Amino acid sequence: MIRKASLVFLLWLALLGNSFAQENYLTAYGGFAGFQAPVWAAKDLGLLTKYGLTGDVVMVPGSTREIQALLGGSVHFAQVDAATTINAIQQGGDLVMISGSLNTFPFSFVTQKEIRKPEDLVGKKIGIVGFGGANELAVVLALKEWNVPRQSVTIVQSGGAATRLVALSAKALDATVLAHPELGEAVRMGMNVLAHMSEMKTAAYPMNAIVVRRSFLEKNRDAVKRFQQAYAEATYQFMNNKDKGLAVLAKRLQQRNPKAVEETYQYFASSFSFPTRVLQQGLRNTLEMIAQRTPGAKADANLGRYLDESTIDELEREGFFKRLAERSPAK
Image 1 (cartoon, rainbow, N blue to C red):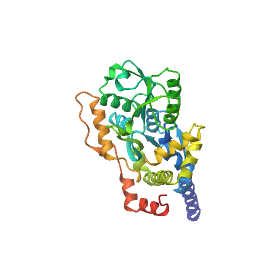
Image 2 (image 1 turned 45 degrees about the vertical axis):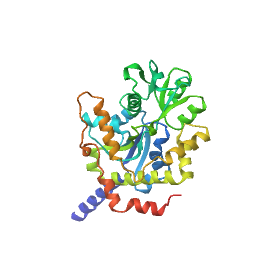
Image 3 (image 1 turned 60 degrees about the vertical axis):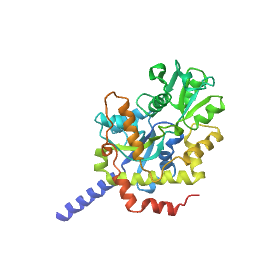
Image 4 (image 1 turned 90 degrees about the vertical axis):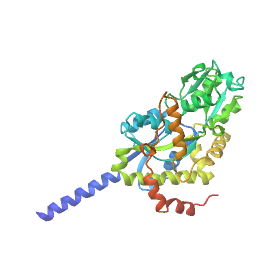
C-alpha cells in the first residue's frame, strides 16, 4: 500500500512539474514601430525556447491597453513606456519595471510641409495613439520646450503610426509623432520633420521598459529571470547581427519597402541599450515630467516604487552579460 501511494505521489509530482514546464508565458507589445524589435527577436530568434520558456508575443494596441492586459492577467510581461507604467502604479496598480532596452524617445515631430516652425502649430490638429502614453507625453513636452501653449492646439486620439501617416497624407491631421519605419515614409511623401525628439532636452526617457505584476515577480522569479536572459540576448543580437535584425524587422513590420526596413534597423541598432537596464536618470526625468503636469505635485524620489532590478543585478553578478558579449562579439 505504501509503495502504491509512493508511486501515485511521484506520478502526481511528475504531472505537476510538466504542468509548470508547459506554462505559456505571453508578452505584449504595443504596435508595429521598430522599437518593438527586442520582443519580436526574443520570439523569432528562438531565445524564449533557448532559456526554457514556452510562450509567444502578442500585439495589444496602445500602451494603456497593454497595462490593462497585464493587470488583468491576460499577459505576463509587457514592453511598455515608463509614463504609462508610472501612472498605473500611482493609481494603485500591482506593477513594476524590471528592465528596458530603449532609453530615449524614438519619435520625430512630423508635420504638413507648410508647417515650418513650432509657432505654426497654433490652431492645428495633432494626432497621437492614445491619451496617457508616450505619444501624448512626447507632444506635450515638445510644445512646452517650444513655448507653444497646450490649449492652443488640438490633440486627438488617432490610432497607430500607419493610420496616423495615412491621416497626415489625407490632411486629416496637421502633425503627429512618428518613429521608423513610418518616419522615413513620411519624409519620402514630402512631410516636414519639425524636430527629432532625441535631440531635444527631454530626450532621456525609458521608452521600452519590461513590466510585470509585482506579485508575479515574487511568485515566479525563476521564469522572470529566464525571460530577462532571453530579452537581453534578443536585444544584443539585434544590435550586433544585422542579418538577424533585418530578418526580424522584415517579418514583423507592416512594411513592403526594403529601404524603410534598412532605415529602421540602422536607427534602432544604434539606439538600444545593453545591458538591458532602465536608465535611472530617464526614470527621474519622467517622474518630474509627470509631476509638472499636476499643479502642486512633487516628483516621487523613491525609484524602488517603480523599478525592481534584482533579477538584472543577479545576472550581472553571475557574469551573464559579459559572457554573452564574449560569445557573440559585436561586429
